[in-house]
Length: 148
Length: 188
Image (tube, rainbow over all chains, first blue to last red; front, side, top):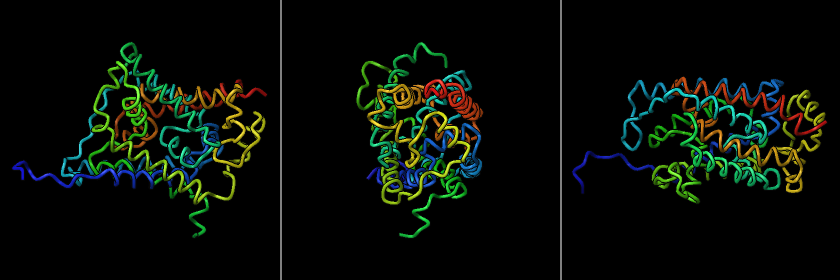
């Protein structure tokens, strides 16, 4: 027995797997992982994706702000804390590069995992994920020379 | 199987549910929701090399997130195989016409089967969409420090100006690529 302040119960990895299953299920069933839906969005020809963003963003704002205002603690007993981000060119430069990739591959990182699970494109999503890993590795290597 | 589970779910069901994820992960363990971090954790686990960006305790920092990504993959299998919708994705007629004009023919799956095919990897459009697209997703999200989830949901939920800026940049890049780059790559 330790004399440290009583910590809450540690959240096991299984809880995160379950949360991920629900997230992946919603992404897939609402077709948010579809290359076609992403094209429809970037062409401003359909409301579906915009409807998702228009409800998801206020939901995230209301719930995260409520946790902060209430100075809530996680179930592990830790105070919930989000570090502020420092403004810099990385958000515009990296963000625009990601945006180009988003339109070409038709998926952002979350949907890539769901697409792999869905067996989309005869398993070729594995190629996209492998390329994304190489892209992230290349960034890590060039990082000291890039503006942030 | 209830019919509503097989049918595609509408935007007004999906929007609030994905919007709840940042708060849910904060409550579960003070975790910051962001899927692109998993690309970094995977690099750190597989090939850290001498790159400082990948030299950290990935199990401790990212174990929960890799578990979440595994769940996302399983959720994709659940939704895309077991509960797969019998209909093709019901995109707008104009989008379908635009894509047909670019030479896309396979509209049955979640992704165009004639672009996302092993046999198409050697074509310009297959290579650019899968390989170049993947590279830019990995490079860009790492540089921007987040993707649609980390900035678009968690950062926006926390009202971080940098995340709103990143989200605007995501859309600027995506719109430019769709209107300027795709016609060149797909030919006509």
